[in-house]
Amino acid sequence: MKSKKVLSLILSSLLVGTMLMGCKANKPEEPANAKPGEDKKVTLTYWQHSSQARDTMMQNLAKDFMEKNKNIEVKLEFIPEADYFTKLISSLATDAAPDVFQVQSGFISRLAKVGSIKPLDESVLPTNNVKNDFISAAVDGLTVDGKYYGLPTDIQTIVLYWNKDLVSAAGLDAEKGPKTWDEMREWAKKLTKSEGGKMTQSGWGEKGYNPEVQALMVQNGGKLVDSNGKYVFADDEKSVEAIKFMVDAYKVDKVYDTKFLKNWEGFRQGKVSMMLGHPAMLGNLKKTAPNVKLGIGLIPAKAGKNTTIVTSWAYSMSKKADSKAATKWIEYLTSAEVQKKWTKETGELPGRKALLNDAELTADPNIKLLISSLNDSAVGYLQSGSLNTIWSTAFEKLILTDAPLKETLKQMQDDLNKEIAKDLK
Image 1 (spheres, one colour):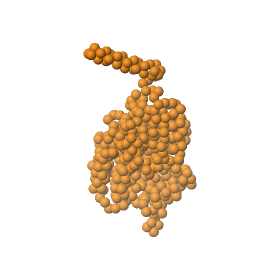
Image 2: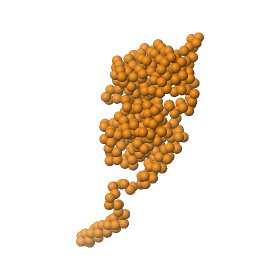
Image 3: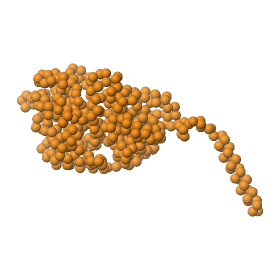
Image 4: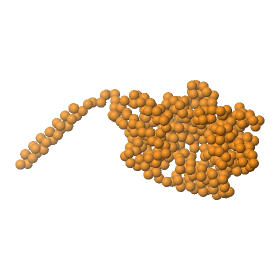
């Protein structure tokens, strides 16, 4: 009986071995020069907040990418901007999450902390390549523990716009514009008019937009955050000094009144003389304010520095994404060729160093000036809707009420630190 059992086991082993050999023999062999997994078909879902021009351009880009990468299919989903963030964050905790998506840069470290996203695949795009090829201010905010968790899109800085006719009428140099912050405040006072105690012309539509204030803080030697990303500006003398400068332009100089006109609407109507804003406003103003003779310059300087603040969104990948395929798609979307198209079509600035002096992009002197703003730029540290709301609410309190400066800034700082301490789950 014992010998029969042994024989039965041997026969069973031979049968299993024969079946396995047959399966191996029938399996198609990969090309000798193929990398493991290279020919595997991968489907990526991609989300972005919707606008007609962006959606059409992304459809064309996806088609081009798929023609160049036959093994990767990209399925696009365009979501109304009002619903986008809520839908995205709730999806990242589930299998319904997109593989690649756009998100405001300020969320990258928080999403990485809770494991909702993962870093770019080093085998596709080495860290040194990102570090060497991209402008520091555009990518430094996308790193966590030395790894890049995305690449930038929707890149903007802060530059200066002025109405040449209004400036000329005040006897000021309409071609050069103000060069320093002190000069800008003096211009703003000369350009402000009122009748019967009511404003009829604003010198500068300033109400504390955070990248503008951050730029002055950096130029003044102030510190917004510490090395751990914690907000410390309320305890930093240079930062408080810069914030007070901006508050005083409104409260003391009275160069703008929020009850007058919305600042950009007033600029379009020729009632607001100067504005600080993003480069993308150039294209917008050409369409919406064709009668305004525009002057354009770098952000005002302090101590010889024209340092501006970079804000952006990022292309990132969820934890469930195929790392190699997702990184290839992100790399394509931020390639020099594609960034050049975005700059020409939308007015967004390029993040790649090689495009700063591109002959085609800089042929227009205005575009050249806008792109040159990236040469002296720093990371913005309020790049999310919730952080912006905390900042703008507190700043409005400063300019519209008698709230004490230091106490209000302390409360703002505490609120910001509580917000970034929240987990995004």
